[in-house]
Length: 475
Image (cartoon, rainbow, N blue to C red; front, side, top):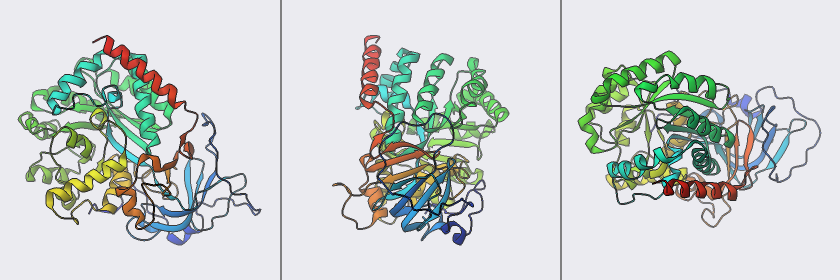
């Protein structure tokens, strides 16, 4: 099972008694507050996030063992208080601060937002494409054939479509590995991400001649956005050692993580990606490896020793016939691992499906229903585990007071989810994006009662369809 100890960047958990009392020295109102179901309202673009009290959840999954029962910190019939964009309290019968927006979530489940460690949002433009191909065929027939035909404005439309899809499915933090694109296209890409209200990491890949764009994009486009951060995306391989070294230097100068696809396909072995990353001095806790399917025992040991982080993308790996990651070995070695959608070869955003596939693949392979990841382990991978991989566990991934208020409310009263038997198991095995009732990012409501806030979904789809038609016409 994935270790449940805090990452080095995670602050010491507060004492349980303090948390259950409301924590954070929150001023409390003495008067009664009316509890109502919250209606959709436009998102707020500026100012402080409103104070919101989620009242009376059937189950709160805090992902903090100091805040409830078991490794996942579960509390029944509990409240969650969000104030100034942070978690201000978790417990039972929390008094409502003056002016708080109180949302009745009785009978519902509350948990941290999902962390999507690996995506390529622009690939919504090729959903379902090249479905008879493996990775190499898909890259040639769909990925490389399409990207050069997407201009800045159409890039905005594809990215906005996919980012909203992720948001409505419960993703609150997303890492997007972005292929080399011009600066003006990056502007539109980042604008689309910012408009959704997601917390995002823009992992930018650039050709060697354009490496100067990395600090420029970070300084001009990302640094002004409070929910944005950056990584340097690279291609690993001994044949790319010089550009890999240069990218590592840029990342180190900017204090950024390196993000690389590694051994996704069995044919990648010829490029010696692990050796190249070690030679370039990029092998360590500031490296996020995507896929990492075809690692040897020795390479897994090296990954563990160096505290490299791994993004597992089971639905994409299944779709492309790439193979099955050795998750039980990773867990035994203590490798920090989270989950990712992986863009066009996941075809849609559904972290519930990703979790179920991560569990099911290992059970089928090992013919063992108790093999890692278990249901609690995969829930942790989708939340706090992903945050740990990004060195963001002090900010997101659990409902620990003081962290940013990235929160999901799930409605179990649906045909696919009911009746209650084992809610933790049902989140993974029965959950669907349609069960996501509310999404809060940094304390702001982004989805309310099943509807995205201040988003004309039909228009977003129409614009993406028009963009796709233009791209096809330019083929």
